[in-house]
Amino acid sequence: MAEVTFTDQNFKEKVLESKTPVVVDFWAPWCGPCRMVSPIIEELAKEYEGKMVVGKMNVDENQLPASQYNVMSIPTVMIFKGGQPVKAIVGAQGKEAYKKVFDEALQ
Image (cartoon, rainbow, N blue to C red):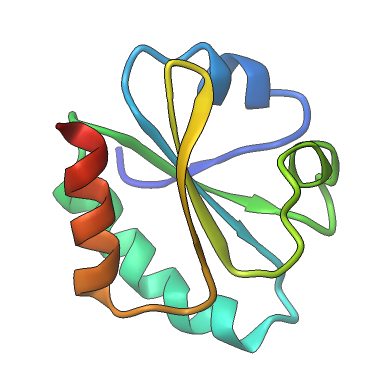
């Protein structure tokens, strides 16, 4: 299924109530580093399909979770387990850095 789009309306159901770990990429269309990270997150969404839910949240259109979880800079990639944030990566990183954090969250 690849990437999911998270919104203020579906965040509780798709992220907080998920039985599997969820990766939320907080981004905005005008953000250059976000555009650099986007293809990496899309690749990882395919690689981790069935193990994690991976999706994006446009912070311009959906501000509630971003403010609730103190997302001050984008891109911020946050991993949720059991409805709680367990790890966040702020700023653009390479694929291996994201894979490392994803793998840690699965342990």
